[in-house]
Amino acid sequence: MKKSMSEKIAVRLVAVGLVAMALTTLLCMVMFHSVFEKQVVRDLQLTAKDIALACERMEDSEDLGSFGGGELRITLIAPDGTVLFENQSSAPMENHLDRTEVRQALESGEGSDQRMSETLGYDTYYYAIRLSNGNVLRVATEAKNFFSIYDDAVPAVLVSCVLILLLSVLLAFFLTRQLVRPIVTMANNLDDVEKNVPYKELEPFAKAIALDQKNRQNGEKIRRDFTANVSHELKTPLTSISGYAELIETGMAKPEDIAGFAARIRKEAGRLMALVGDIIQLSELDDASEEGAGKLTMEPVDLAAVVNECVQDLQPAARKAYLVLSAQTEPVMVEGSRGLLMELCQNLCDNAIRYNRPGGKVEVTVRNVAGAAELCVKDNGIGIAPEHQQRVFERFYRVDKSRSKATGGTGLGLAIVKHIAILHNAKIELESEAGKGTSIQVIFPEQN
Ligand code: ADP
Image 1 (cartoon, protein in one colour):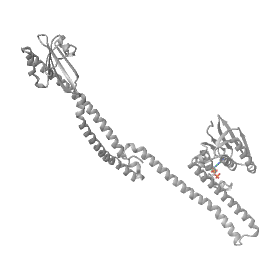
Image 2: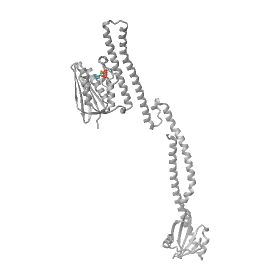
Image 3: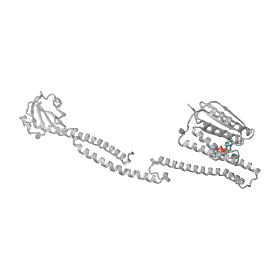
Image 4: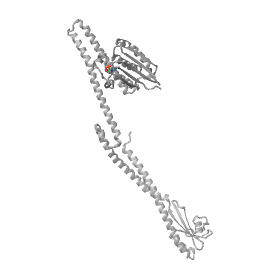
């Protein structure tokens, strides 16, 4: 199942929210803790100085016990490290000379340090001052450490998480609705999709839709035109056939004409058959191109062999038209369908013979250019004027309709050639000059 857009947006918003919150919390904690720590140290320093001042005037060090209100730990240490007084423990204490703050105070008059407390989650801050009599007064206090501040923040963080979650889901819902609404409007106006693009980012998408629509409309028009053309092409021979048959049926034909009429009927029927055959072939080729060349059985075919056979077959037709038809070939392999390649060659040679003049010639060559096959059919016939050259590959396009029909053309030969070339990934190049002749080249892709 596809994920919904609001779900996706919600997940992202939650992620962004959580990361932002985590970063903010961490930064706040670091800043807060450093300010807090500085404050603790400063307070401790001031208090220590006050107590030290009082201590200087004190007769008995035991009087120190009255300071600090129980919150502060006050210790008096002799220069040799012996603890002279300690307000929070009456037990004898170990030597304090190794304490950093004490050593600093003995050396330079003042010293400070910070160590982990025995109480979990607390740090102890020490401040020590050397008195005029050489003893060291040390004051210490406990304060929450970084991690226990974090513990305090946990409930607030959790509440924020829940809030972020709720907010993200709500925001995602409304954002999605707002983002999607114009797209739905666009989808409802597909006929004019390019004028209704709500976001710049969707322009390529709209363009693709518009192009697809145009292609489809073009395709429909081509199909409609083709159907109209086919009906028209079929109707003409059928009308003649029906006319001749009627003459015979009603007895209007003289007995000696009947054989002639029958021959005409047969000729028209032959044209119909050729036409239907070409239409079937084209529709099969259309199917093949739609489903990709995969449906055709493509195999390595020697183009020279195909061309030689084709030229052999057409020799009688060439002789009948008083033409010289010749082939010059080099063996070269093409990945293709032998039947279709034969058809392509036949159609090209057929045209070169039909649109020619007595005494003319047709040369067919197959060349092997670095592993790529090139087929060329060249005639010195009537040629094609430049304005028709691009259009002769269209279905039913003829330069001279009566000549085409008189020689048994259907108007589909070159359309079939073009289709077969496309299925073989081959390129067609036409060169022609009216009155001089035509050369059509089919260039196949290189075989590896
Ligand atoms: P047709 O069945 O009419 O020959 P084609 O599709 O084979 O249909 O060719 C389309 C048109 O192209 C022809 O009617 C003809 O006018 C022109 N044509 C094709 N081949 C040649 C050629 N070798 N020389 C001159 N004209 C040609």
